[in-house]
Amino acid sequence: MALRKILIHPDPRLKKTTAPVVEVTDDIRRLADDMLETMYDAPGIGLAAPQVAEMQRLIVMDCEKEEGANTRPMVLINPAVVWSSDERNVYDEGCLSIPDQYAEVERPAEVEVAWMDLSGTTQRERFDGLWATCVQHEIDHLDGKLFIDYLKPLRRQMITRKMQKLKREMARS
Ligand SMILES: [Zn+2]
Image (tube, rainbow, N blue to C red):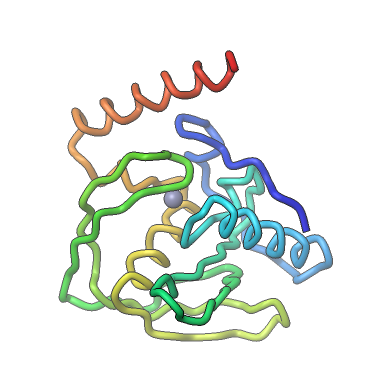
């Protein structure tokens, strides 16, 4: 396993739609392992392949963040929302590609997601609470969409300028 470098917004690769995974190969298994390690190291609760410059439809997540809870590392290949609730929920979202910036985003409170697991089997599960927010946020990444795209333009531009400044500082150090 190896840590991958997380792309920081703005980056054209974070705005692109990704390609479906056709087959679970050793490369895909390695990518999933690396992404989980990178996510836990960050630390974060979700990570999408384009955030590590892999333009494929794969996400990892683990929202079991309560003290003493067991971990639940999940790898979702070609995930798709197949049902979403009318009831909506607001969460203060953040993103590993937009460090230290948080904003309230409203999304369906519950979603059912279908995906392929690492053994190539189709899975289907209903998520609620933080899991529902996380899985929708990560699937958005696969379509080049960031949580700041839900904000008003002024707020989005403010965050983007902060990230540009951060990237200049990171490039200098
Ligand atoms: Zn994100």
